[in-house]
Length: 440
Image 1 (cartoon, one colour):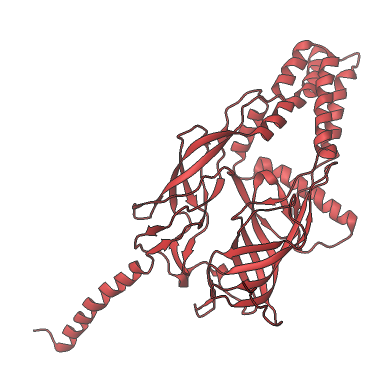
Image 2 (cartoon, rainbow, N blue to C red):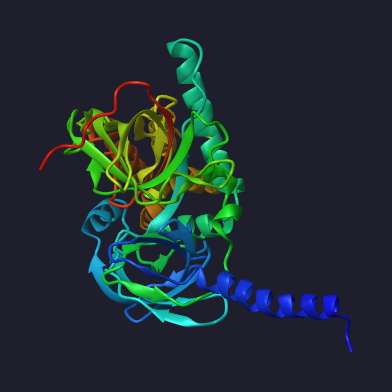
């Protein structure tokens, strides 16, 4: 017979292990409520047609009642349900000699695929604003005067141009650049395209083994007891077109913030409340929109409010918007190269008209090709096939004028944050008296 102490030890193990296993599984089962944002992204290029399967991954984890229920990179399956005409892109492309019938895919997601292979049916709204995204990050405060800042802007534009040919994904970018020179070309959903859809109805996540809140990303914890790094979703669209200083801004906390002892400092579902502090719509002559907002209060789900000082430090943005953030949290479109590109195109347009006596047929062809290529392949073929310096120069002048119009005369670009845009805010609690919630 086994000694009594050994029997007691084995019986204890038999009791503890099932309970521990149950706790590890049961603590992650949850019901995800309706209107929960699901930010997703695809990792490969896909063709555009109705019925095209879409397999995407969560960009950020999903929490329910401060428990992690769906980690990032969880897979979702969906389809393209419809195609809508992209009229603004069609119009601008036709001016460049591109007659591709650009369309916007309408995407709907129908299932989660969990790590163990289980499928969870979901009901979501449709998404049409798909585009590759990047994270806007506030840079350190700038030093120096106006000339120094303009020099920095020029260097940044140069780095962006170099990154186009050197950064990861350059093959896809170069392929799209070559396609854009054709008068008609296939359209695709780019690699890295992201959508944010909302759940239209609650759904249940079955028990599964995922990381506990104690092992979440350290950036969600409070390293400094007087500072919080809050990750949240804007609860409505913000745009420099319609926003006015003083307009209310609200964002819902997406991930709980933990103290060093793993207790919760700010629960998921809390609300950041603030206002728009600066807003200017875009205007003619290339003047771009400006948008700035901040938060002055955090309201817990219990209704308790705390005054805070907050600074926007990061936000997701569509690559097509090409936005930049200042160290003060102001967001505006990146500056364009308004001088070099139009001057270069104008010089190329004039080159066929300057012919030297010793120019051979190859040199004349080169000048016509460089001038007429400013409006794509159609202009290149027409300009070179005509054999006329005037025709080639005409195409070149048209391209230079179009570039000048887009940079100097056309209305500048707006600053727009869609509903459920992911933002990161650094907050500091204030010692001022807590504001009372508005009475109803």
